[in-house]
Amino acid sequence: MRALVVDDSKPSRSILARVLRDLRFDCTEATNGLEALAALSSMSRPDLVTINWHMPVMDGIELIRRLRALPDHRGLKLLMVSTENDKDLVAAALAAGADDYLAKPFTPEALARKLVALGVCTAAEAAAAGTRGPIRVLVVDDSATIRSVLSATLGADPDLRVVGTAINGQVAIASIAASPPDIVLLDVEMPVLDGISTLREIRRMHPKLPVLMFSSLTERGSKATLDALLAGANDYVAKPTAQTADEVAARIRDDVIVKIKTLVPRGGPAARAAPPATARPAAPTRKEAIKGIVIAVSTGGPTALAEVLPAFAASARVPVLIVQHMPAFFTAQLAERLAKLCNAPVLEAQAGQEIRPGDILLAPGGRHLELAGDGVSLRARLTDDPPENSCRPAADVLFRSAARVWGGGTLGIVLTGMGRDGLQGSRQIVEAGGTVIAQDEFTSVVWGMPGEVVRAGLADAILPLSQIGVEVAMRLKRRGV
Image (cartoon, rainbow, N blue to C red; front, side, top):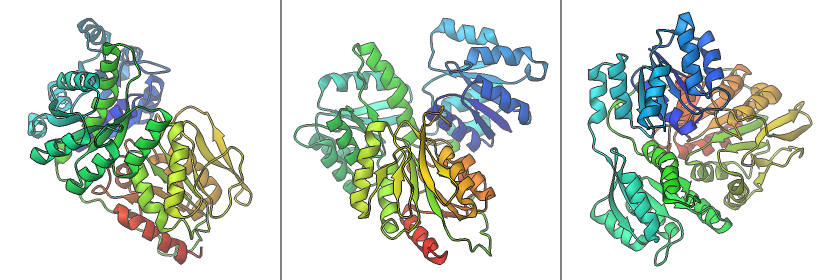
Protein backbone atom coordinates (compact mmCIF):
# COMPACT_ATOMS: atom_id res chain seq x y z
CA MET A 1 0.00 0.00 0.00
CA ARG A 2 1.06 3.58 -0.59
CA ALA A 3 0.50 6.73 1.44
CA LEU A 4 1.27 10.40 0.89
CA VAL A 5 1.90 12.32 4.13
CA VAL A 6 1.40 16.08 3.74
CA ASP A 7 2.41 18.19 6.76
CA ASP A 8 4.82 21.09 7.34
CA SER A 9 5.57 19.80 10.85
CA LYS A 10 8.53 17.43 10.88
CA PRO A 11 7.53 15.72 14.19
CA SER A 12 4.00 15.10 12.92
CA ARG A 13 5.26 13.72 9.60
CA SER A 14 7.67 11.49 11.47
CA ILE A 15 4.96 9.98 13.67
CA LEU A 16 2.56 9.54 10.77
CA ALA A 17 5.13 7.99 8.45
CA ARG A 18 6.50 5.67 11.13
CA VAL A 19 3.10 4.23 11.99
CA LEU A 20 2.06 3.94 8.36
CA ARG A 21 5.27 2.16 7.41
CA ASP A 22 4.81 -0.28 10.27
CA LEU A 23 1.37 -0.98 8.81
CA ARG A 24 3.13 -1.82 5.52
CA PHE A 25 2.55 1.48 3.74
CA ASP A 26 5.19 2.83 1.37
CA CYS A 27 5.27 6.51 2.36
CA THR A 28 6.05 9.67 0.42
CA GLU A 29 6.21 12.97 2.29
CA ALA A 30 5.40 16.57 1.31
CA THR A 31 5.55 19.78 3.33
CA ASN A 32 2.68 21.68 1.66
CA GLY A 33 -0.11 21.34 -0.88
CA LEU A 34 1.96 22.26 -3.93
CA GLU A 35 4.60 19.66 -3.06
CA ALA A 36 1.79 17.13 -2.60
CA LEU A 37 0.34 17.81 -6.05
CA ALA A 38 3.80 17.44 -7.58
CA ALA A 39 4.35 14.17 -5.72
CA LEU A 40 1.00 12.79 -6.88
CA SER A 41 1.89 13.52 -10.49
CA SER A 42 4.99 11.35 -10.27
CA MET A 43 3.96 8.50 -7.95
CA SER A 44 1.59 5.58 -8.28
CA ARG A 45 -1.90 6.25 -6.98
CA PRO A 46 -1.76 6.18 -3.15
CA ASP A 47 -4.22 4.29 -0.98
CA LEU A 48 -4.24 7.14 1.54
CA VAL A 49 -3.35 10.84 1.76
CA THR A 50 -3.00 12.45 5.20
CA ILE A 51 -3.27 16.25 5.06
CA ASN A 52 -2.45 18.90 7.64
CA TRP A 53 -4.71 21.95 7.68
CA HIS A 54 -2.37 24.92 8.24
CA MET A 55 0.62 24.86 5.87
CA PRO A 56 2.51 27.50 3.90
CA VAL A 57 2.20 27.92 0.12
CA MET A 58 -1.01 25.85 -0.08
CA ASP A 59 -3.00 24.81 2.97
CA GLY A 60 -4.83 21.54 3.52
CA ILE A 61 -8.33 22.77 2.71
CA GLU A 62 -7.23 24.12 -0.67
CA LEU A 63 -5.37 20.88 -1.40
CA ILE A 64 -8.45 18.79 -0.60
CA ARG A 65 -10.63 20.95 -2.84
CA ARG A 66 -8.17 20.66 -5.72
CA LEU A 67 -7.91 16.90 -5.35
CA ARG A 68 -11.69 16.49 -5.32
CA ALA A 69 -11.89 18.63 -8.48
CA LEU A 70 -9.45 16.44 -10.40
CA PRO A 71 -11.07 13.34 -11.98
CA ASP A 72 -8.00 11.15 -11.37
CA HIS A 73 -7.95 11.96 -7.63
CA ARG A 74 -11.63 12.18 -6.68
CA GLY A 75 -11.65 8.70 -5.18
CA LEU A 76 -8.55 9.14 -3.00
CA LYS A 77 -8.96 8.44 0.71
CA LEU A 78 -8.20 11.78 2.38
CA LEU A 79 -7.57 12.01 6.14
CA MET A 80 -7.29 15.53 7.55
CA VAL A 81 -4.85 15.66 10.48
CA SER A 82 -4.87 18.98 12.35
CA THR A 83 -4.66 20.77 15.68
CA GLU A 84 -8.06 22.33 14.93
CA ASN A 85 -10.66 20.51 16.99
CA ASP A 86 -13.63 22.88 16.96
CA LYS A 87 -16.64 20.93 15.68
CA ASP A 88 -17.50 23.60 13.11
CA LEU A 89 -13.98 23.52 11.68
CA VAL A 90 -14.03 19.72 11.57
CA ALA A 91 -17.33 19.95 9.71
CA ALA A 92 -15.76 22.46 7.28
CA ALA A 93 -12.91 20.06 6.53
CA LEU A 94 -15.33 17.22 5.88
CA ALA A 95 -17.47 19.49 3.71
CA ALA A 96 -14.40 20.38 1.65
CA GLY A 97 -13.98 16.69 0.84
CA ALA A 98 -11.98 15.03 3.63
CA ASP A 99 -13.13 11.46 4.32
CA ASP A 100 -12.27 11.66 8.02
CA TYR A 101 -10.55 13.83 10.58
CA LEU A 102 -7.85 13.14 13.20
CA ALA A 103 -6.96 15.74 15.84
CA LYS A 104 -3.36 16.48 16.80
CA PRO A 105 -1.60 15.41 18.91
CA PHE A 106 -2.46 11.81 18.12
CA THR A 107 -1.15 8.37 18.98
CA PRO A 108 -0.39 5.41 16.70
CA GLU A 109 -3.45 3.72 18.16
CA ALA A 110 -5.73 6.63 17.23
CA LEU A 111 -4.34 6.74 13.70
CA ALA A 112 -4.77 2.99 13.29
CA ARG A 113 -8.42 3.26 14.33
CA LYS A 114 -9.00 5.94 11.68
CA LEU A 115 -7.40 3.74 9.03
CA VAL A 116 -9.76 0.91 9.92
CA ALA A 117 -12.73 3.27 9.62
CA LEU A 118 -11.48 4.39 6.20
CA GLY A 119 -11.07 0.81 5.04
CA VAL A 120 -7.33 1.09 4.34
CA CYS A 121 -6.30 -1.04 7.32
CA THR A 122 -7.86 -4.19 8.75
CA ALA A 123 -9.02 -4.47 12.34
CA ALA A 124 -6.54 -7.29 12.88
CA GLU A 125 -3.62 -5.07 11.84
CA ALA A 126 -4.80 -2.28 14.11
CA ALA A 127 -5.72 -4.49 17.08
CA ALA A 128 -2.23 -4.46 18.56
CA ALA A 129 -2.22 -0.67 18.63
CA GLY A 130 -4.22 -0.52 21.84
CA THR A 131 -2.26 -3.04 23.84
CA ARG A 132 -0.76 -0.49 26.23
CA GLY A 133 -2.33 2.09 28.47
CA PRO A 134 -1.58 5.83 28.55
CA ILE A 135 2.00 7.09 28.64
CA ARG A 136 2.93 7.65 32.30
CA VAL A 137 4.58 11.07 32.81
CA LEU A 138 6.47 12.43 35.83
CA VAL A 139 6.59 16.26 35.90
CA VAL A 140 9.56 17.79 37.73
CA ASP A 141 9.59 21.58 38.16
CA ASP A 142 10.02 23.91 41.13
CA SER A 143 7.28 26.26 39.87
CA ALA A 144 3.85 25.37 41.21
CA THR A 145 2.24 27.25 38.31
CA ILE A 146 4.19 25.29 35.68
CA ARG A 147 3.46 21.99 37.42
CA SER A 148 -0.23 22.83 37.52
CA VAL A 149 -0.49 23.89 33.86
CA LEU A 150 1.58 20.92 32.68
CA SER A 151 -0.44 18.44 34.72
CA ALA A 152 -3.76 19.83 33.53
CA THR A 153 -2.76 20.03 29.86
CA LEU A 154 -1.01 16.67 29.68
CA GLY A 155 -3.77 15.00 31.71
CA ALA A 156 -6.41 16.23 29.27
CA ASP A 157 -4.87 14.04 26.55
CA PRO A 158 -6.36 10.53 26.76
CA ASP A 159 -3.05 8.98 25.73
CA LEU A 160 -1.12 10.56 28.61
CA ARG A 161 -1.36 10.25 32.38
CA VAL A 162 0.57 12.39 34.86
CA VAL A 163 1.52 9.89 37.55
CA GLY A 164 3.34 12.33 39.78
CA THR A 165 4.90 15.76 40.23
CA ALA A 166 8.07 16.76 42.02
CA ILE A 167 9.34 20.15 43.19
CA ASN A 168 13.02 19.25 42.81
CA GLY A 169 15.34 16.51 41.66
CA GLN A 170 15.64 14.87 45.05
CA VAL A 171 11.88 14.30 45.21
CA ALA A 172 11.89 13.14 41.59
CA ILE A 173 14.55 10.47 42.17
CA ALA A 174 12.61 9.08 45.12
CA SER A 175 9.43 9.00 43.01
CA ILE A 176 11.18 7.20 40.14
CA ALA A 177 12.66 4.64 42.52
CA ALA A 178 9.21 3.92 43.96
CA SER A 179 7.41 3.69 40.60
CA PRO A 180 9.31 4.38 37.34
CA PRO A 181 7.26 6.38 34.81
CA ASP A 182 7.44 6.02 31.02
CA ILE A 183 9.05 9.48 30.64
CA VAL A 184 10.32 12.31 32.85
CA LEU A 185 9.65 15.95 31.99
CA LEU A 186 12.50 17.67 33.82
CA ASP A 187 13.17 21.33 34.60
CA VAL A 188 16.80 22.46 34.30
CA GLU A 189 17.12 25.06 37.06
CA MET A 190 15.78 23.92 40.45
CA PRO A 191 16.81 24.23 44.10
CA VAL A 192 18.06 21.33 46.28
CA LEU A 193 19.02 19.16 43.29
CA ASP A 194 19.13 20.76 39.85
CA GLY A 195 18.13 19.20 36.54
CA ILE A 196 21.65 18.23 35.44
CA SER A 197 22.44 16.43 38.70
CA THR A 198 19.03 14.80 38.64
CA LEU A 199 19.56 13.62 35.06
CA ARG A 200 22.92 12.05 35.93
CA GLU A 201 21.34 10.13 38.78
CA ILE A 202 18.46 9.02 36.55
CA ARG A 203 20.93 7.79 33.95
CA ARG A 204 22.79 5.84 36.64
CA MET A 205 19.61 4.21 37.93
CA HIS A 206 17.59 3.94 34.71
CA PRO A 207 19.83 4.29 31.61
CA LYS A 208 16.98 3.89 29.10
CA LEU A 209 14.29 6.02 30.81
CA PRO A 210 13.39 8.84 28.38
CA VAL A 211 14.03 12.32 29.80
CA LEU A 212 12.68 15.46 28.13
CA MET A 213 14.21 18.70 29.43
CA PHE A 214 11.81 21.61 29.92
CA SER A 215 13.83 24.79 30.13
CA SER A 216 13.81 28.54 29.68
CA LEU A 217 15.98 29.45 26.73
CA THR A 218 17.75 32.39 28.28
CA GLU A 219 21.53 32.36 27.78
CA ARG A 220 21.95 30.68 31.15
CA GLY A 221 19.08 28.28 30.49
CA SER A 222 20.34 27.28 27.05
CA LYS A 223 23.82 26.49 28.39
CA ALA A 224 22.31 24.31 31.10
CA THR A 225 20.06 22.60 28.55
CA LEU A 226 23.06 21.80 26.35
CA ASP A 227 24.81 20.35 29.41
CA ALA A 228 21.75 18.18 29.94
CA LEU A 229 21.73 16.98 26.32
CA LEU A 230 25.42 16.07 26.55
CA ALA A 231 24.71 14.29 29.83
CA GLY A 232 22.13 12.06 28.16
CA ALA A 233 18.80 13.88 27.98
CA ASN A 234 16.79 12.65 25.02
CA ASP A 235 15.47 16.04 23.89
CA TYR A 236 14.35 19.43 25.16
CA VAL A 237 11.40 21.80 24.89
CA ALA A 238 11.51 25.53 25.57
CA LYS A 239 9.26 26.81 28.32
CA PRO A 240 6.46 28.88 26.78
CA THR A 241 6.87 32.64 27.00
CA ALA A 242 3.17 33.27 26.36
CA GLN A 243 1.30 35.49 28.79
CA THR A 244 -1.99 33.66 29.35
CA ALA A 245 -2.69 30.17 30.65
CA ASP A 246 -4.51 29.29 27.43
CA GLU A 247 -1.50 30.31 25.34
CA VAL A 248 0.83 28.28 27.55
CA ALA A 249 -1.46 25.25 27.30
CA ALA A 250 -1.54 25.57 23.51
CA ARG A 251 2.27 25.60 23.35
CA ILE A 252 2.41 22.53 25.57
CA ARG A 253 0.00 20.68 23.29
CA ASP A 254 1.93 21.68 20.17
CA ASP A 255 5.47 21.14 21.46
CA VAL A 256 5.63 18.97 24.57
CA ILE A 257 2.99 16.35 23.80
CA VAL A 258 4.31 15.67 20.30
CA LYS A 259 7.81 15.06 21.65
CA ILE A 260 6.57 12.85 24.48
CA LYS A 261 4.74 10.63 22.00
CA THR A 262 7.77 10.51 19.74
CA LEU A 263 10.19 9.53 22.50
CA VAL A 264 8.03 6.87 24.15
CA PRO A 265 7.47 3.82 21.91
CA ARG A 266 4.04 2.29 22.34
CA GLY A 267 2.78 -1.22 21.82
CA GLY A 268 1.11 -2.02 18.53
CA PRO A 269 2.23 -1.57 14.96
CA ALA A 270 5.48 0.20 15.74
CA ALA A 271 6.49 -2.48 18.23
CA ARG A 272 6.17 -5.39 15.80
CA ALA A 273 9.26 -7.25 14.79
CA ALA A 274 10.60 -5.88 11.55
CA PRO A 275 12.81 -7.62 9.05
CA PRO A 276 16.45 -7.25 10.08
CA ALA A 277 18.14 -4.22 8.59
CA THR A 278 20.75 -5.13 6.04
CA ALA A 279 23.55 -2.97 4.72
CA ARG A 280 24.12 -2.26 1.06
CA PRO A 281 26.99 -4.41 -0.22
CA ALA A 282 30.15 -2.34 -0.34
CA ALA A 283 31.96 -1.98 -3.64
CA PRO A 284 34.82 -4.50 -3.45
CA THR A 285 37.30 -2.37 -5.39
CA ARG A 286 36.70 0.96 -3.58
CA LYS A 287 40.11 2.66 -3.36
CA GLU A 288 39.42 6.37 -3.68
CA ALA A 289 40.72 8.30 -0.69
CA ILE A 290 38.19 9.92 1.60
CA LYS A 291 38.17 13.63 0.79
CA GLY A 292 35.63 14.78 3.35
CA ILE A 293 33.08 13.68 5.93
CA VAL A 294 29.53 15.01 6.33
CA ILE A 295 27.34 14.20 9.33
CA ALA A 296 23.56 14.51 9.78
CA VAL A 297 22.00 14.32 13.24
CA SER A 298 18.95 15.62 15.10
CA THR A 299 17.17 14.29 18.22
CA GLY A 300 19.80 12.89 20.57
CA GLY A 301 22.51 14.55 18.53
CA PRO A 302 24.73 16.23 21.16
CA THR A 303 25.27 12.92 22.96
CA ALA A 304 25.82 11.08 19.67
CA LEU A 305 28.37 13.62 18.44
CA ALA A 306 30.16 13.54 21.78
CA GLU A 307 30.51 9.77 21.34
CA VAL A 308 31.49 9.67 17.66
CA LEU A 309 33.74 12.69 17.03
CA PRO A 310 36.48 12.10 19.64
CA ALA A 311 37.35 8.75 18.04
CA PHE A 312 38.72 10.37 14.88
CA ALA A 313 38.52 14.18 15.07
CA ALA A 314 42.02 14.92 16.35
CA SER A 315 43.71 12.75 13.72
CA ALA A 316 41.44 13.38 10.73
CA ARG A 317 43.20 15.11 7.85
CA VAL A 318 39.99 15.80 5.93
CA PRO A 319 37.24 18.36 6.54
CA VAL A 320 34.33 17.26 8.74
CA LEU A 321 31.05 19.19 8.32
CA ILE A 322 28.04 18.64 10.57
CA VAL A 323 24.36 19.50 10.43
CA GLN A 324 22.72 19.25 13.86
CA HIS A 325 19.11 20.42 14.00
CA MET A 326 19.27 23.08 16.71
CA PRO A 327 18.36 26.75 17.18
CA ALA A 328 21.03 29.37 16.56
CA PHE A 329 21.77 30.08 20.22
CA PHE A 330 22.73 26.42 20.79
CA THR A 331 25.10 25.63 17.95
CA ALA A 332 28.00 27.90 18.97
CA GLN A 333 27.87 26.49 22.49
CA LEU A 334 27.70 22.94 21.15
CA ALA A 335 30.78 23.55 19.00
CA GLU A 336 32.66 24.83 22.05
CA ARG A 337 31.73 21.78 24.15
CA LEU A 338 32.61 19.33 21.38
CA ALA A 339 36.00 20.99 20.92
CA LYS A 340 36.84 20.24 24.54
CA LEU A 341 35.77 16.62 24.17
CA CYS A 342 37.62 16.13 20.88
CA ASN A 343 40.83 17.92 21.84
CA ALA A 344 40.55 19.58 18.44
CA PRO A 345 38.96 22.82 17.20
CA VAL A 346 35.23 22.50 16.47
CA LEU A 347 33.75 25.73 15.16
CA GLU A 348 30.49 27.17 13.92
CA ALA A 349 30.89 27.66 10.17
CA GLN A 350 31.33 31.25 9.02
CA ALA A 351 30.15 32.49 5.64
CA GLY A 352 32.94 32.42 3.07
CA GLN A 353 35.56 30.83 5.31
CA GLU A 354 38.12 28.56 3.69
CA ILE A 355 37.55 24.86 4.38
CA ARG A 356 40.84 23.13 5.07
CA PRO A 357 41.89 19.56 5.89
CA GLY A 358 41.18 18.80 9.52
CA ASP A 359 38.53 21.51 9.93
CA ILE A 360 35.47 20.46 11.94
CA LEU A 361 32.59 22.82 11.20
CA LEU A 362 29.05 22.88 12.58
CA ALA A 363 26.23 24.47 10.58
CA PRO A 364 24.91 27.48 12.53
CA GLY A 365 21.33 27.16 13.67
CA GLY A 366 18.85 28.63 11.23
CA ARG A 367 21.18 28.65 8.18
CA HIS A 368 21.96 26.08 5.49
CA LEU A 369 25.62 25.07 5.12
CA GLU A 370 27.07 23.85 1.86
CA LEU A 371 30.42 23.46 0.13
CA ALA A 372 31.29 26.01 -2.53
CA GLY A 373 34.22 25.52 -4.86
CA ASP A 374 35.88 22.95 -7.07
CA GLY A 375 37.38 20.50 -4.59
CA VAL A 376 40.76 22.25 -4.60
CA SER A 377 39.73 25.58 -3.13
CA LEU A 378 36.69 25.18 -0.91
CA ARG A 379 34.69 27.66 1.12
CA ALA A 380 31.68 27.46 3.39
CA ARG A 381 28.52 28.88 1.93
CA LEU A 382 25.71 29.84 4.31
CA THR A 383 22.24 30.60 2.97
CA ASP A 384 18.79 31.53 4.17
CA ASP A 385 17.16 29.48 1.42
CA PRO A 386 13.80 27.89 2.33
CA PRO A 387 13.87 24.98 4.78
CA GLU A 388 14.14 21.48 3.35
CA ASN A 389 12.40 18.64 5.18
CA SER A 390 11.15 21.49 7.44
CA CYS A 391 14.79 21.98 8.51
CA ARG A 392 17.26 24.82 8.23
CA PRO A 393 20.06 23.83 8.35
CA ALA A 394 19.18 20.71 6.36
CA ALA A 395 21.53 17.77 5.95
CA ASP A 396 20.29 17.21 2.39
CA VAL A 397 21.70 20.61 1.38
CA LEU A 398 25.12 19.81 2.82
CA PHE A 399 25.18 16.21 1.57
CA ARG A 400 24.39 17.02 -2.04
CA SER A 401 27.04 19.75 -2.13
CA ALA A 402 29.57 17.23 -0.76
CA ALA A 403 28.57 14.69 -3.41
CA ARG A 404 29.05 17.34 -6.09
CA VAL A 405 32.47 18.46 -4.85
CA TRP A 406 34.01 15.27 -3.42
CA GLY A 407 32.16 12.61 -5.44
CA GLY A 408 33.37 9.12 -4.56
CA GLY A 409 35.57 10.56 -1.82
CA THR A 410 32.55 11.53 0.29
CA LEU A 411 31.80 9.68 3.53
CA GLY A 412 28.32 10.44 4.89
CA ILE A 413 27.21 9.58 8.43
CA VAL A 414 23.54 9.66 9.45
CA LEU A 415 22.96 9.54 13.20
CA THR A 416 19.91 9.54 15.47
CA GLY A 417 17.13 11.95 14.58
CA MET A 418 13.49 12.47 13.75
CA GLY A 419 12.23 12.67 10.18
CA ARG A 420 14.02 11.91 6.92
CA ASP A 421 16.54 14.72 6.48
CA GLY A 422 19.67 13.26 4.92
CA LEU A 423 17.87 10.62 2.86
CA GLN A 424 18.03 12.36 -0.52
CA GLY A 425 21.51 13.67 0.19
CA SER A 426 22.69 10.16 1.06
CA ARG A 427 21.25 8.91 -2.22
CA GLN A 428 23.27 11.53 -4.10
CA ILE A 429 26.43 10.59 -2.20
CA VAL A 430 25.96 6.92 -3.14
CA GLU A 431 25.17 7.79 -6.77
CA ALA A 432 28.40 9.82 -6.87
CA GLY A 433 30.36 6.77 -5.68
CA GLY A 434 30.64 7.74 -2.00
CA THR A 435 29.65 5.74 1.07
CA VAL A 436 27.18 6.21 3.94
CA ILE A 437 27.21 4.87 7.51
CA ALA A 438 23.94 4.79 9.49
CA GLN A 439 23.39 4.44 13.22
CA ASP A 440 21.47 1.33 14.23
CA GLU A 441 17.97 1.38 15.68
CA PHE A 442 18.81 0.10 19.16
CA THR A 443 21.23 2.91 20.01
CA SER A 444 19.24 5.71 18.31
CA VAL A 445 17.06 7.97 20.43
CA VAL A 446 14.77 8.19 17.38
CA TRP A 447 15.46 5.92 14.41
CA GLY A 448 13.96 8.28 11.88
CA MET A 449 16.78 9.74 9.80
CA PRO A 450 19.11 6.71 9.90
CA GLY A 451 16.15 4.35 9.51
CA GLU A 452 15.11 6.07 6.28
CA VAL A 453 18.62 5.67 4.88
CA VAL A 454 18.75 2.00 5.88
CA ARG A 455 15.31 1.19 4.45
CA ALA A 456 16.31 2.85 1.18
CA GLY A 457 19.31 0.49 0.93
CA LEU A 458 21.83 3.35 0.97
CA ALA A 459 23.91 2.44 4.03
CA ASP A 460 26.90 0.21 3.50
CA ALA A 461 27.28 -0.13 7.30
CA ILE A 462 24.65 -0.04 10.07
CA LEU A 463 26.44 0.31 13.38
CA PRO A 464 25.77 0.99 17.07
CA LEU A 465 26.82 4.44 18.19
CA SER A 466 29.86 3.17 20.08
CA GLN A 467 31.35 1.65 16.92
CA ILE A 468 30.81 4.47 14.43
CA GLY A 469 33.74 6.68 15.42
CA VAL A 470 36.14 3.73 15.41
CA GLU A 471 34.84 2.62 12.01
CA VAL A 472 35.41 6.10 10.58
CA ALA A 473 38.97 6.17 11.95
CA MET A 474 39.65 2.78 10.35
CA ARG A 475 38.24 3.88 6.99
CA LEU A 476 40.36 7.04 7.05
CA LYS A 477 43.44 4.91 7.65
CA ARG A 478 42.57 2.26 5.06
CA ARG A 479 41.71 4.77 2.36
CA GLY A 480 44.95 6.68 2.55
CA VAL A 481 44.12 9.62 4.80
